[in-house]
Amino acid sequence: MSARIFISLGSNIEPEHYIKAALSELSYHFNNLLCSSVFESEAVGFEGCNFLNMVVAADTELSISEVVALFKKIEQENGRIPGAKKFSARSLDLDLLLYDSLVCQEPVELPRAEILTNAFVLWPLAEIAPRLIHPVTGQSYQSLWNEYDKTRQKLWTIPFTCPQMASS
Image 1 (cartoon, rainbow, N blue to C red):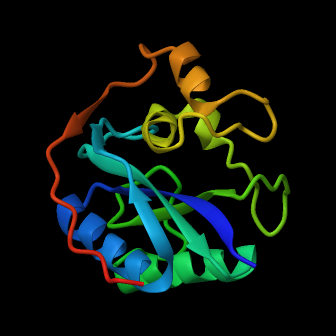
Image 2: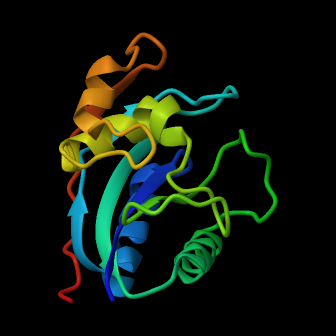
């Protein structure tokens, strides 16, 4: 049975290169990719180069554990150092935001808490799934974004050409 997943992608080390590499890998492993705009934002939690972030929706037959393991593998293949500090520069960060409307704590927290706290996650999610309902709050992602305090984090869309996706 197929699940619809939503993935947060972020990078602030050669970000265009690593975002494109991640999209290529995701298109190889998942079906029906839908990509948000790419957003640039200041680093959160530490001083560093700006990040590029986006959200991708996809369909998968993989379990949550398999998806998370695949993300870790893709991150490491793209220069992510295992065990690096949470608030630090990174070549690639892939986070599972949603797995259908599942709510759980294990093997990862779903829905991911950052959806409600980070503009660089909520805005692109609202862009590609505005009417989808957050399984805990019961609100659509568009209404959550409309209510979000936009003075908390600065971010803006940037021109970005997505690579050709592998046909699934």
